[in-house]
Image (cartoon, rainbow, N blue to C red; front, side, top):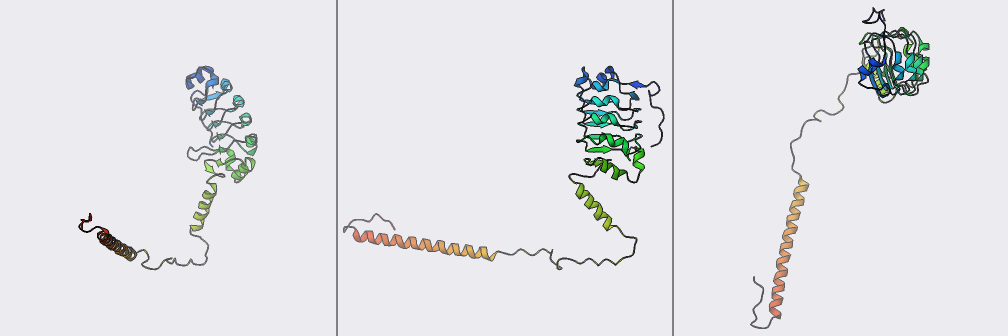
Length: 259
């Protein structure tokens, strides 16, 4: 990262004060502040920021900070952005036991030794030391073994510089990268790939004309025949009952059956 010029207010040295914190957060008590954005204010001293004991989300990016001492008392801090400052060390963050995400891109961290203090943070999952879109980096990122050394030092990380390295989806991401690499044209001569062959016969996907279901037609026909037989049996039973009624009735008695 190239040296930067002075920022607004840097010459006078802007310091964090209770009045500044209250005006930026809208809270009357420092202990009640949960979210705080102090971006681009030309801060050189964090002052009383350590009194915000309930702070969970903090943005200090774009300032002129050289040390983070007051942050050691922020045990509830989960998300911290200190990008684009002048930090050469992160030791105070070792006490931030709930820290989960840290953006330190655009500082002066020179080697893995400056990250050793983060090794005890069991909940730390996301770390950013380089941000190509914002053109922010650290001297440590120039090392060819940068990624390997960070992963070895902080094995619990799931995301480094915005790229997932472990956890849900990482295996699939790596598989896609390997597949993409294997499909790229190779500069070295090799055996010619076989021409792709269709895996189904010609005409397999052509639509067929609609066909009537012979099984359904046969079932309907049999049902109609059975229904007709039932009607015939009912008629024959009625005739038999009528004749029996007439034979058993006294002479001259009119049958109650009407045909």
